[in-house]
Image 1: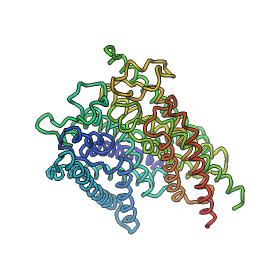
Image 2: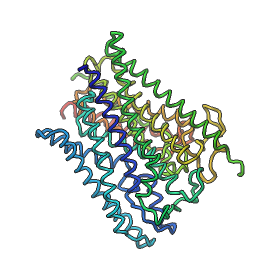
Image 3: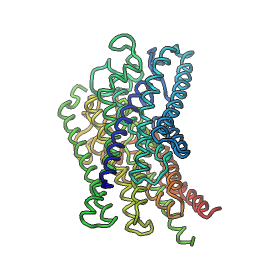
Length: 304
Length: 235
C-alpha cells in the first residue's frame, strides 16, 4: 500500500483518538472539579455556600495529565519491550494510569474538604466520593488510553523521534493546557454561576457564590459534566483533534506537493510551513469574525 | 569535539532561553480569573499554556529534524527546523484561543474585550464599553490573539533552537527531547514569576517588565549551557 495513505490513516486515527481524549479529559475535570474553576469550589464554603461538588485540585490539569499519561505510556512501553501485544500493553498501561488518577482524586478530596470542615463547616460527603470516583476514573481512563494510542501512532507511524513515555508526557501536558483553556471556561464561567443572568462573566464581588442547587435537588459534579458535555467538552476535543490533525496534515501536504514538484526536503518543509501559516491566518480571521459577531449581538453596556 | 562545535550550541541554548522567556510575555493568559470570564485572556496558567504550545512546536521541529536528508549543521535546514517549531506552536495556540473564544461568546455570552487599552491597537475597536462592571475584561480580542500568535512563534523557535543545540552537541533525540522539555519549563517559570499572575499581551503595561525576564533567563540558560556542554564532554 502507498506509504502516504498509511500515514494519512494513522494521522486520522490519531486525531480521532485525540478528539475523544480531549472531550473525556474536559468532562472528567468537570465531574471532579479540577483546574482553575476549582478555586470557586474551594472558596464557596468561606462564602457560606456548603456544597456537594467533588473537589479535586490535585494540581493544574497539564501537570496532572502529564503524570497520568506518562505513567500509562511508560508501563505500556515496558510491557511492549517484553513482548506483550501492543493493544493489551496500552490498555494495561492506561488502567494503571487511571488507578494513579483515582488514588490522587480520593486523597485530594479528603485533603481539601477536611481542611475546610473545621473552619467553615463543610462536611465530608462519603457518598460523593463513592459516586463520583467511577466517572472520574472512567473518563480519565478513556482520556489516557486515547492519548497513549495517539502517542504510539506518533512514534511508530508519524515519524516522531521521541520514545513513547516522552511523547505521552508532551501530549498529556498539551491536552491539560487545552482542556484548562477551553472547556473549563464553560464550567467555571457559566455552569458554576447559572443563577446569575446569562452573559457578562463573573464580577469579583460574586466569586465564591456558586450554584449549590441543581435542576432537581442539590448539585454535584456529575450535573456539571452533563451540562458541559453540550459545548465545553466537545469543543475541547475538537481543539485537540484539530491540532493533531492539522499539524500532521500540513507536513503530509508538503510531502505530496513536494513530490509532485520533484522537490527535496527543503521544498517539502517550506510548503508545510506555508500551509501552517495559512491555517493560522484562517484561525485569526475566524477569531475576528466571532469577535465582531459578539460586539453586534450583545452590544456595549449603556447603563453604567 | 572542537571548540567551535561546542561554542555554537552553547550560544544557541543561551539565546533559546531568552527567546522562550520573551515568548511567554506575549501569551495572553488570564489565569483562574479568566476561567470565570473575570479577566481578559485564556483561562489557564502562564507556564502551562506556554509549555503546551512550546512542546507542540518542539515535536514538530523534532519530527522534521529526524527526517532523512536533514543536516542540522546546514543553515537552511536549521532555519526550517526552527520555523517548523514556530508554526507548530502557532497552530496549537491559535486553535486553542479560537475555541476558547467560541466558548466565551456562545457558552458564557461575553464580548471579547481588553482591559489594558481604550482601543484595540490592531482593529481600533473601543474596548471599555464592552467590559462587564466588576471584571477586568474577558475573552480573546484581536490584539490578544495576535500577541498570542507572536508568543507561540517565539516559543516554538526557542524550543526548537534548544533541541537543535542539544542534537548538535551529540545527544540522542530521546535525551535531547527530555532536556529540552525541562529547559523550556525552567524558562517559562522564570517568565511567569516576572509576569506575576496575568498578562494580556504586548499592550499590557506588565509587558514592559520583559527585559528583567530576558536577563534572568539569559543567565539561567548560560549556566544550563555550561552544564549540557560538560555533559556532552562526558564530565
